[in-house]
Length: 432
Image (cartoon, rainbow, N blue to C red; front, top):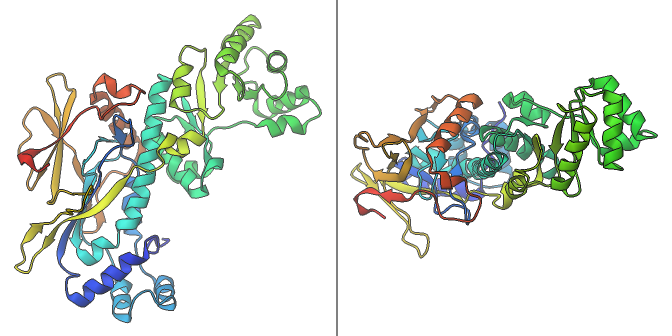
């Protein structure tokens, strides 16, 4: 097990050191992860990264190598190093389950434990959630714009090598069909796909030789890239080489709307009516929507997906909302600084639904959640209890949850135009 303990910020450990010296380190505390707002113009967002998060917490251990690094860099004193050498998160974590849609102020994660064990998790939790939620939220907009046509994740070359694996996972939760990333396939069981790039065509003496080599290797059901030179000539050659059973052709440049129509007509005229058309080339949700009327069968999406389509972070924060006082009672605490006021207290959340099962509001309260009755459903799930993972980590469960959560939202949630969150966030008892 590779330690995640140093995937954190220096000041987490110096806070721990000072708290150990003050005697406050063992106070019971409640931390909360939430977004003050969604990325500008977005109507909803999607939770992803929870499965990676709980595993990162489980691997948050300071072994000999980590302790020696902290000692050599003089990050903290010997008392703190002694504490860290035995560190294990033994508290509880609950929150929105992976695949759930969320809104401003939604308590995505509640972390309960001593200050010492909970504060250390801030950076790694936010690193995972801010990235994965941003990717899943962008992926959701793309898959909805695609209208049921498959989306292929192919952004590995446009981001950090391990961010690419996480991005493929988050995109899969939000409806992407496959990924080009083999590590994502191995680690997360996501279906992988891919055939060839322009380099393969350019390698050969001519396009015919390249097509013949690919078909001989992969069979006529392969996808041939037809825009290296002249598209109409390549389409004719592709059908000549592979036959009318050619699996697909891929377009990666030019006016995709016009080209897709021209290629479809050409394929049909050649008798290759079942041959699919796959388009790539820096697609985002708006470009995909613009191709809705085109005879396109699938989309390959890279750069815009792995950068969150203009919102590369979800803007989530990790704040202390309650802590034990000198009498042993849990008291609410909150920031009061300008523009960054928080709401103290341990939160609960449910989604209010109307008689048709459509979401009307995100209801957030403090303390014990009352009986939701017939107008809503609870949103919080146990993720870790007494340090042990208790949540279903399968991606199929997350994909199903995503589909169900999105289906609850009003239809205007799927509009790509800039807008406000599609349902309001309401704090019970006037806390906000």
